[in-house]
Length: 129
Image 1 (cartoon, one colour):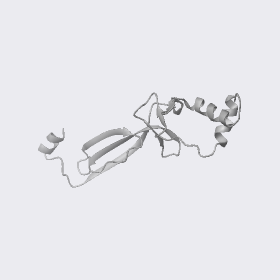
Image 2 (tube, one colour):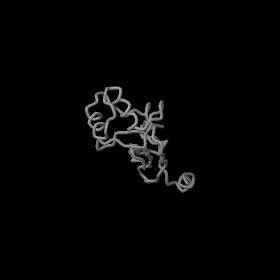
Image 3 (tube, rainbow, N blue to C red):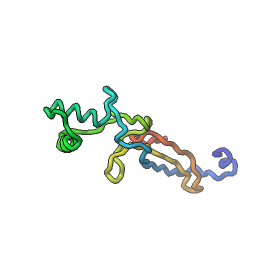
Image 4 (tube, rainbow, N blue to C red):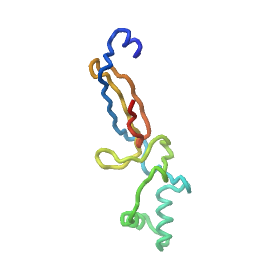
């Protein structure tokens, strides 16, 4: 398509606009598992609570324990989604955390023709030509 646009002299090639945005994946954070142990988040919390001396914690105990826990983070190095393997844990523009992809596109600013479009993991850096 770009070849045809170039033959028709529609592409000016002087300025290209590039934009990217995070797209929430169709996967819940509840679907993440630890890469090293295969534990889901609840199993991981239950293990941490037991290690902290809370025997047989209830769901409410786990919730309170997790809220008070210092240094907690969801790292893509440690966690992955079972339902969206290409998605990454990312902080969205509104401050929430989700499994996400990054969509990027490049447009010829004069003709407004789409030159390229990509979808990548949510933590991918914007590619520069």
